[in-house]
Amino acid sequence: MLKTPLFLVSLMLVSGLISEPALAEVAASRQSELMHLLKQDCGSCHGMTLKGGLGPALLPAQLEGKPTEYLVVTILEGHANTAMPGWKTMLSADDALWIARQLKQGISQ
Amino acid sequence: MIRTTLFSLLLVLLIPVHAADLRGTGDLALVIERASGSIQIIETTGNSSLGRIEGLGDLSHASAVYSRDERYAYIFGRDGGLTKVDMLTRKIVKRIMQAGNSIGGAISQDGSLVAVSNYEPGGVKIFDAATLALVADIPASYGDTKQTSKVIGLVDAPGQKFVFSLWDADEIWVADMSRPDKPSIQKFKDIGRNPYDALISPDGRYYIAGLFGEDGMALLDLWNLDAGVKRILDHYGKGEQKLPVYKMPHLEGWAMAGQYAFVPAVGRHEVLVIDTRNWSEAGRIKVHGQPIFVMARPDGRHVWVNFAIPNNDTLQVIDTQSLKIIKKLQPGKGVLHMEFEPRGEELWASIRDDDQLVVYDTESFEERVRLPANKPSGIFATVRAHKTGL
Image 1: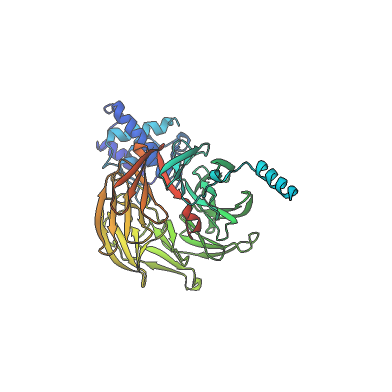
Image 2: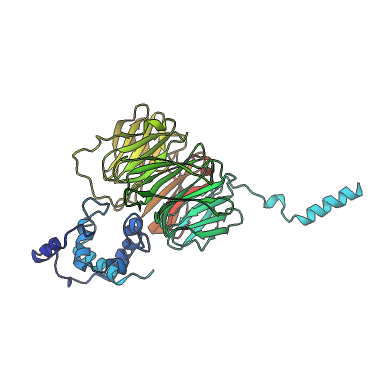
């Protein structure tokens, strides 16, 4: 079900469209904004506890095998032909990386 | 004589309720506090909070319907919880976990059945409104593999029917529950890609599903089921690039004034106006952002609109005669939902990120009061009890 092919992600990595995870740290105040957005606004489709809704569950178990970079691209660009929008108008690459990492490790409820 | 007097005295002593303690429920409403799994009960005569009920589970995207006596609310939680609460005692009467992941519900015309639409497992479950005992289970299975679809847009309809749409299967189903033990289901296929929500006209005749996967909407005339589903507004937006949709619009109730119906455009900063005499597009109104709720004041003169992130700090009011925006309000961050008081003189809005409810006078647009609430989302007034589809 990976709709953005992984090779494309690799291509983007190589071409520098997204950089290797090791970007600038996200400030603490921004982190709390992002966590709010994740729970409340991503939550409108994925559920506030990320157990899924119209969109799929985003718990660590579901995301196993999906690289962090893939999640970053999905967050920024969305998935064509699905209801997942790209969030790049509201989120920087650093923001998306921070969110992707939270998703991989699981957020506290 | 003495005996009668004594009996009356005894009665008075036995019944601890005094006239002063009695109240109706017609001016009550409940507010979903989604982060804390609680609801707040408010009254709209003096605009105050009466109390809070806790322990309702995951209430993201929760909604509610009311018993016909307007005393009990049935609350549909995201986690599959169905909770019946008493609006007067402010207590949970009964709570069940009926599915893994659900999205909303409806109450039957006669008030005896409560239906819940589920994402996981996809389908509709129908319960006895008094006891919450399971009456019928309707899995939304489709196609050759009999996979199940997420179900959305569930409403009640006259004739003891429930109507709902299948997000994954592109179908509309009409379930006749005249015989609760033996639901009769009529299916309409290929209604359009990914119906995301639906509404029914106040008379219960027209069911309209919004489509996410393509332009237009699917219309079913419940008085003429044999005519099948008709596509309306299907030329809308052809060839235009949609904006990313950060939140699915809601089709709730029927923003209608005269012959016009008002609906949110998906992925566009526009409200669409439909001429219900021939279901053609009668206009497009440019608005502040992607509309989420498009709700008509009960008298139909104005339509209030809220918006998806990042424009969710704003409300706009459309005049239904001129089709022009006559007011813009910025009540705070995260304006999630609005509810009119029964005759429409005031409107309540939930301001999620500011943890507030705000009440507006709908003639002067002056702010009347603000009340604290914990991440409020949906607001549901008891007047919905007597409205088809709500």
